[in-house]
Length: 282
Length: 241
Image (tube, rainbow over the protein chains, first blue to last red):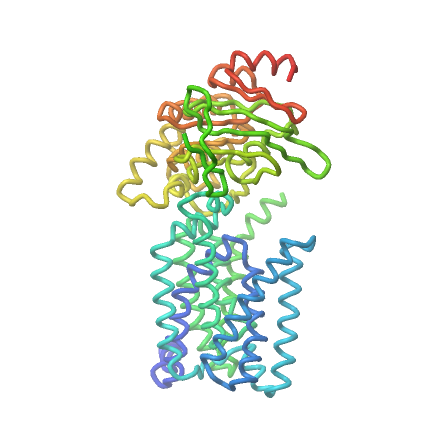
């Protein structure tokens, strides 16, 4: 088998591989700009907390309605919003600060979600919700994901300047009559919806990786936000394709394999900067 | 003339003020941090279209007053009333902006953020004018990581200038800025004043205040003295306020 065959054949031969590649491509389209904004706004930990806060909601919905995609989505969305609001409130109203408050909510949510799943499901269900099931997404999921991605891209295209202004100088934007809190709320809304959609494919533990890792890697190289978004998109697409191949040939779970490829890109990016590290220490 | 409360929408009854139209009227304004009283019963009227220097030693309450005037803080006691057309039409530049120097945008993009509702085709000329006023045209397409502290300060000022606000509140915009840049900024502010805007700037330099400003507000130990610049500067330099 030639190298070209090895990298193309699984996608020609197996429908589930083609579907997984399409899911990754659609996810990457909206995850790229959202991830760049999350990194620029320094909201990586907040995003991670929202992602983990989904788990008790998913587990609760699973206990009540079984594997119903709509119920699971609503449960995930409600808990992500509630977890984010509560963690934000604690951060503002107590001496804990954002870092400690969000870390506490993130850990408690994860533990609560796993316990709920253990009580009402089995080990397979727990693994499914934690790491997703990219190779066997629910019926109609791709269509739903396509709609969410297209709507998110449209919102981003029309509101890019506002989102960027809000990420750059939130204090100024909140006082400016032309912005207010509109872009902050809109951004969080779009992000939560995308996070819920990503959860079905990648799981609550790793969903954030698709948003954050490509953006973090492109942050190393780019001095323009446009460059960051474009390279994030390319990185996510390449990692999706390479990760699926890794999963296929090494018999690994698809979501973690994709994140692992992104991890390799990340370390390659860091290595490319090694000269500046030595310059700094000299 | 009718005046609106700065935060609340209720209309405060008609009140006669000086012959000059008033931009902001402050009555019995109080503010304290825990036990430290910063502003104690301040009352003054700022004339519309004036350029007002807010003078005072460190800790005199300049930043607190500017934040109150800009609507960034609510008065603990007393009232701040703005002319109706200035409500929701205030631009504020804090002394220390929480801005990340490595943020991947250019100088021109910062300025463009000042006018979110202006169509793209009209933005370019406004950005050009503001950058020209702030002597930043050669740096228009520089990433902000390549700007000096003074250039970044001017870019943030240019963003405020294109905003079209009727009232500009600038908190010590000359910190970390060289002398040439200070004069560039002040000339830019004078152009805004000529366009009918009311400009309020906190600073420490009496000579600069005397050269560029027409009114001054001198803060000391919770009280304030407001008036034409020629009257206030001698009080400030003598430490009489």
